[in-house]
Image 1 (tube, one colour):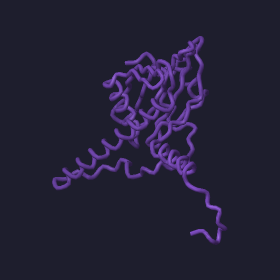
Image 2 (cartoon, one colour):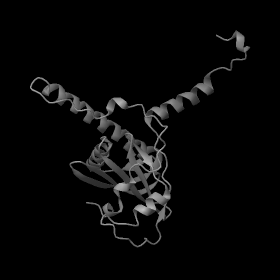
Image 3 (cartoon, one colour):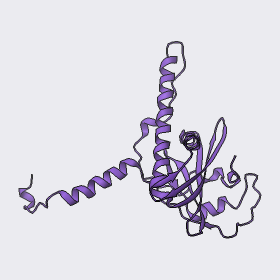
Image 4 (cartoon, helix red, strand yellow):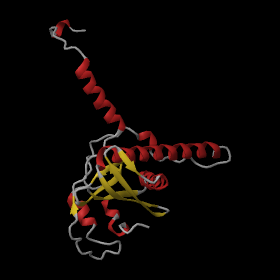
Length: 215
């Protein structure tokens, strides 16, 4: 149980979301089949497929956060999910030095599992990261789990989350801690598309023909 659990509030879910963004994964929405003598195997297979899809998506988000967002330093990460079956919380410490990442794989698996649980349609969740930078800085960022991905929280969102405990009691501000706007976590398909566009722009010859003569 992480010492930062009290700073993750369920009210983080759904704040500052761009409703126009379409993640294109409607097929992953949770639609359990009716259980019957003849349909039990199909229902179990469907549930297993959904679970695997959510775990894969959570792992994609987690790896994208590590490789493209966190940066150098030691990061204390806490994932929280509120589900109809109860609350889940897992934490871990990750150290990033250039291209090297010091990580506990078992802890990473548990964090990904909590993120996946928060992706189920009836659940909510958040991820909070406290970073100790190589320059001595200390700052906190947060992401809410929405539409099967990690969505950045503003500095004010995360500051407010650290102002109250789960019991609603006010918490004194922590000296020397900076609350920062979280960065957008890129999706793998977006990175591939952007990379492909950049490579195409560098290698494709310019078409100087008149518009009416182009194929």
